[in-house]
Image: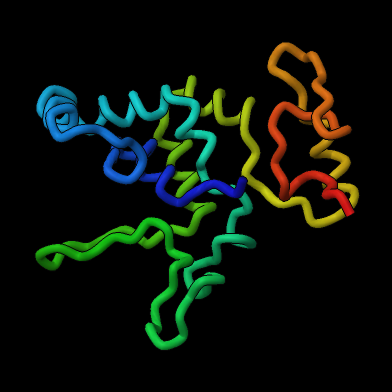
Length: 166
């Protein structure tokens, strides 16, 4: 329900090892006949992959200095979801949090994909009653028809932006 970090590299670069289970012949065919950009386009066209993009931002996944699953003995953080390693003394871009990664993904994607994500998915956290009410009022189907799921209006039930049963 909160997504998975592995969805980001899948739709960003077409990396399929963690998100698609294929036999070795299919993997060879995909890598031989389709470049990374083509594979990324294929992954973006699969709505199932976009539905597992991480939700909750830094409140759930951490930031560049902290993450909930950090091990104090390691001294590094898992809050950095896209990490760049220097190669041959090159200058690398800054590491990115979940929020930065999603922004980077949308900034570098085609307009149709940005619209698909904006219309169908929400990745934030509602921290007050007013924010929950705003989220509930905005969740409608693409054609404007309201759905009633679990007593709430919504096309996607994002647990971090809805009332929870008590």
